Image (cartoon, rainbow, N blue to C red; front, top):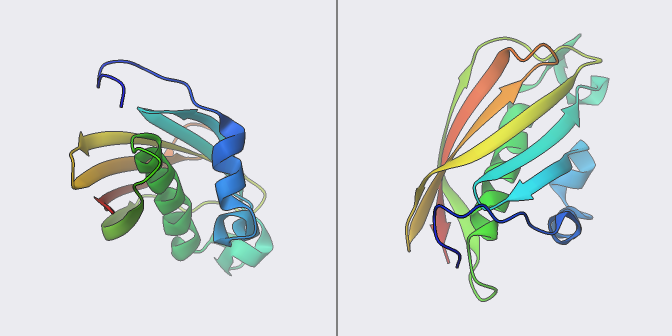
Length: 140
C-alpha cells in the first residue's frame, strides 16, 4: 500500500468493471475519477430514482455515496482483501431535482487495518450540498 500522503491515481476501468451488472450500474452511477484519497462519481436524477415527483429518493443518494466510499476503501486494500459497510449516517440538506446530474466526492477520514471511514459529499450542479454521508467500512 502506498504511503498515506501519496496520491495515486488508479485505473478507472478496474473500478467500473467492479460495478457492472450490479446495483451501482442499475442506478446509473458513473465513476469519473479514482485515487486512494478521492473517489468521484456522478448520477443523473431520473424519474425512476425519485420518491415524489421531481425529488431524488434518499435511499438512492445513500446507495450512491455507499458505492463511492466502498470503492475508495477498495483502492486502499491489497488484492486479497475485501470490504463491507458496517455503519452509515446521512444528513440531507436539499433535494436532488429530477433532470440534474449530482456529483459525489468521497474522501477518507480514517484508514486503519480493520476499518476505514469515508465521508461523501453529494453536490448539485451549482456546487450546493445535497447530502453528506459518513460510512464505516470493515476490511475483510
